[in-house]
Picture 1 (cartoon, rainbow, N blue to C red):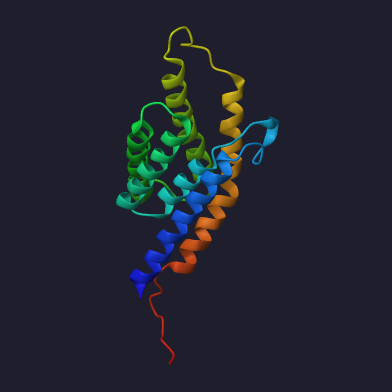
Picture 2 (cartoon, rainbow, N blue to C red):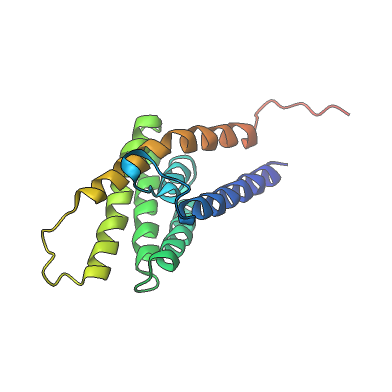
Length: 173
């Protein structure tokens, strides 16, 4: 019964990732503050890393990185490798050092979106004459992603609590 609940949780996470990817890629649909888009898929990745083990977090990190690679163009696999490794590190830190709460989700959503934006900036501008050109638009995207972590965190926490193993569960026939 417990394996069925885990599988259901992973299916819900996968559907959430697909939904947030479609939501983030639809033009003019998800405008946050300052008329800029956010990266809701990054918030989903961080919340999955907070609640799951290292291997599952790394798998979802690579999967979400591939989705970001498909959407932004450039080299295929760079975001997958970087976000997979970052997800593994975050899940390990949450296992041993970090308490998982809303502030942690918001903080690491900002860090992960900053990493994704830096990778995108480096790949598309080729660092010719843009080494220290950091547009204010990028900071708006990071703030919007941090704010989007609020509903995603509460949804993932609810999914985790509904599908976790209960120790003294009695089966009624």
